[in-house]
Amino acid sequence: MKEVQIYTDGACRNNPGPGGWGAILVYGRYEKELSGGERDTTNNRMELMAAISGLEALKEPCCVTLYSDSKYLVDAFVLGWVDTWESHGWKRGRDELKNSDLWQRLSSLVSKHEVSFVWVKGHDGHEYNERCDRLATSFADTLIDA
Image 1 (spheres, rainbow, N blue to C red):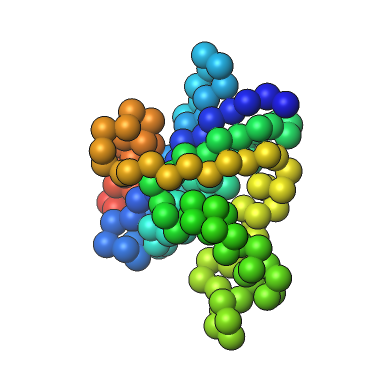
Image 2: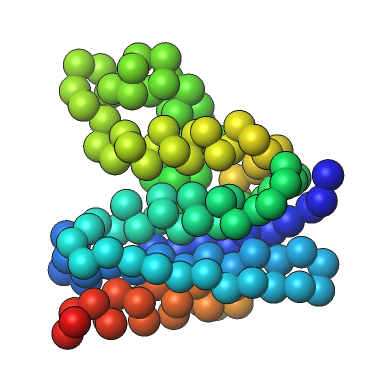
């Protein structure tokens, strides 16, 4: 399997509000930047969309290390929350799981690859995290005046 690193970040102005996401895929010496966003969203949705979009860009099953500054995203997989939510019909106890549509989509993508999730401290000078933040915030900013 090819080894790929995916760096992700999400951003939202006035949470909820205009949001953006950024992802950078690194395979050997090759890099691919992706970004997108939504006019009315939340920061957590954009964090999830960054990971989803990065994994969707892969053309075949890969061994992936996915880096994110979102504890929400990383802990959900590292601590097994996603498995619990899935086994309970995508609910948290009796309550609806927020962003269940994206969690289901992401869980399906993760099952197609060998994915390790790594938390990185945001806004701490990590080169790829800073680049993803710029991609995400730039996209969110284009939606403010649009």
